Image (cartoon, rainbow, N blue to C red; front, top):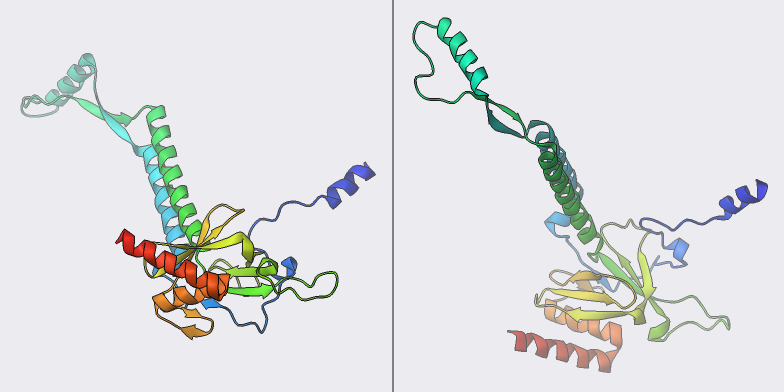
Length: 254
């Protein structure tokens, strides 16, 4: 039993949620970011409000569907005759002369209500996941910092030894996503005011807005910001070549 308790105590569960930069051995204190997005998109600012509203609407739709989704059901003929006779005896004139069919509303079959409830629930939760996931993939700020010093004490200076630090709106000041710079790549998009950061060993990508953003401490036009990021990422020569290639692809697409 003691061995089992010791094993459980030493068991390390996978980390869920944003990680602090300190736990990843990185510090960006007093380091100027290479990119700052400035203002966030309106939906990124109001994501939590939108998620709460979505969940409230989803819960209401599920409750209405499960408990109040009905269908019209005709009464049996004998019940309809009995109902008509009783209403005729209690009224001054004849009833049911308009040809109306007697009936009432009853809940739909449970399998119909259950399936539609599950569809409402899946749609609402899926929309909330898309909003939160999209918010976590927006780049708010990012830094490129040298990796930890090697065993010989030499500072890391090559591109393969540099680390990319990304902060999304999901991260607080001391949190961020850290990855080797050489495991990322810049991707062009059809939108002239946006770029993408592709991840070679992870799923998904990050969105980098260029309109009104600061690159290397200066506000630039989207064109100049794109050029500056390619240069920072790949160096002067290769960066310029990739930038011109991306511009050529854009022109051909247009």
